[in-house]
Length: 259
Ligand code: DAK
Image 1 (tube, rainbow, N blue to C red):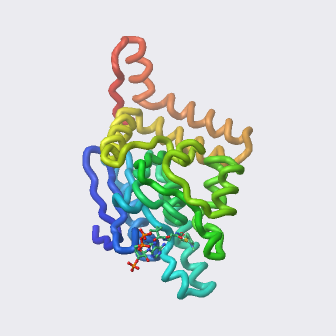
Image 2: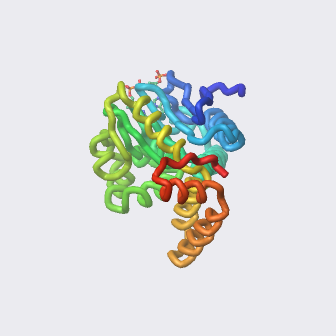
Image 3: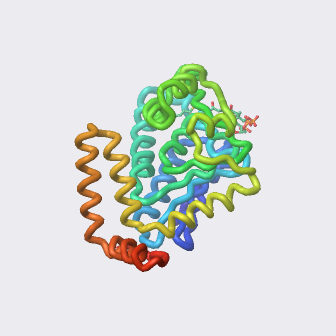
């Protein structure tokens, strides 16, 4: 795959998406977003990829949308950017495979929003989070006003969105923005350990859990419970369900085949 701003690789069940625009702290522009779309598409199509890890470098996960490019544009650019960003972010958030954001350094604005599209956020102790758009006379344009309060609640989200405060990893963990904080030198190891745990889980059940949660959050409780029931019953038709129940009864570890 010929990508300029993303390094993509895969192996051992993991798809690695690494932002690669270090001279601009991985700031997002349409080209970066299009590369991200291609990499996510590749993860979706490749059955050998079971877990996806999204990362930046030690200084920056992503320092936001490219402010220089936004400064040059007009309302038409804003629509072009938002259409593209919303499409790519939905594709990432809806990926029917578990996704982990491995965050070191700055995760600001559009960067924080990309992390919000992942199922897990593991942060290095140097990570910095925030939605500073308000200081630029803007609001988040990549889902921040919607995904952030859904994840961390209205109170902490209001502070981040109204004040544009930047917070470190410890506080991000405390308010539920990240799942775990680890020393920078352990980040890759811890992220791989989580991926490896996920790889041992039954793939179809993971997919069903993700679908039930994501679809359920966008609907009423009654409809959400119906989605859960349908997916629960669908899983009864899988080999993995038979294996999981048999393994328990036979007091052994299950070996799931993703069927
Ligand atoms: N955009 C463009 N360039 C950036 C950048 C950004 N967001 N962040 C950093 N850079 C560039 C710097 O300009 C500098 O480039 P040169 O001057 O060397 O050419 C280089 O990266 C290194 O940055 P610094 O020299 O500033 O590094 P420091 O360590 O001193 O400071 C910093 C790091 C992260 C504190 C600082 O760079 C900073 O405050 N950056 C801006 C952070 C920010 O405000 N981010 C939010 C941007 S607004 C949308 C979707 C999403 C969004 C909007 C619309 N649509 C779909 C339409 C999101 C909006 C945002 O994210």
